[in-house]
Length: 164
Image (tube, rainbow, N blue to C red; front, side):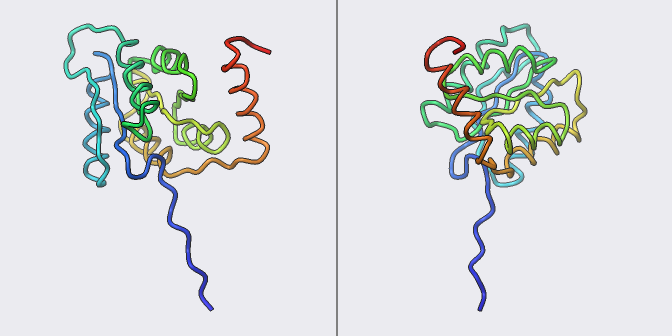
């Protein structure tokens, strides 16, 4: 007798993927957006859309808010290094933004940390690696178990506004 197969996991299935970048990440953001659209995913592009200098926190906050208010099911942020964007997004309760430099860190961000936003640095990651990291991030499920307990501890401290 054949068992029904579970549908493959896709982070944010049924909702757009929110993308945001500053001037140092706009080229990579646009390439990622094109790949998402080509794969059938809907994209919520929250800017920026040019190379004029802008402030990365504006875009990190916008992507985090899009997830929190239900307009997006996952997010991708890009700046020069990915660091500023990840710091910004992680200021929001309920957001777990992970900076990844390769496929392995993107996969582990989902498996172990239940990350819902991926941060990438255009100046430190190649386009092919970024595309692969994004693809793996979006199809990797959270493992739960001991990792859920740890995420719970993070969330508890976040809700208190300080470290326990």
